[in-house]
Length: 201
Length: 110
Image (tube, each protein chain N blue to C red):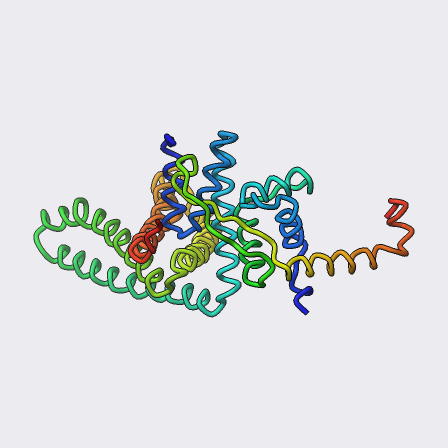
């Protein structure tokens, strides 16, 4: 069967999320019959939701542990990278002016983004690895908790921060926090799950 | 008694498996619930219910062949067990007994 790109992405995600192979096959068969990508996406989201709910309900302690571990790693890695970057910024401030400007404009901003991305990948990988064989579901629970926290913080602080000048920065920060970070955490989790996925015949 | 653990949706899935018979797998079970039960059933929910029924010993599953139209994924066929049939009969008996003697429901005015 020839697949379009969105369908391939959904199948790839479904396999990484360790959904039952027979269920993925059923979703593809139903899609082939009615040709609705919306229906396929709905089936995929429903299957993931159903899997997370049933596994979290069955293994409540593991679910709590996954959320707690995710937060601890987030706080720990955040503290280490923040202090390292602060040290670097302070060192640049005390050095030559050109070096300070180079650090401030060309080195530190991409370094901050890179450490956030690498840290998120690592957190996702670790949370998933330590909660096998339920890694992807447990990591999604942590991502859900993280998103709730981020959305809460955003709603709380947005009215105070919002000006025309700050709009692009806020838009970037929002997209980074709500899309890039969760995507990186889940990529780490899927990478970990792919290594432990049994080969289907 | 395991009857108390059999939920409304699980009962619907079990009945759909019985109705479909030999060819019962995710898609046909979801279709049966959609067409006869008049409610939409997502495949993920059907599989979650079938997994629970399997764990309770009310259905049995076996893997079929992988086909190209399913992206090379095999079908998982389900059939109801003797225990599952007993459970459905018990549920029917309970529901019918509760139904009787409710004039408001019989007239359709509740």
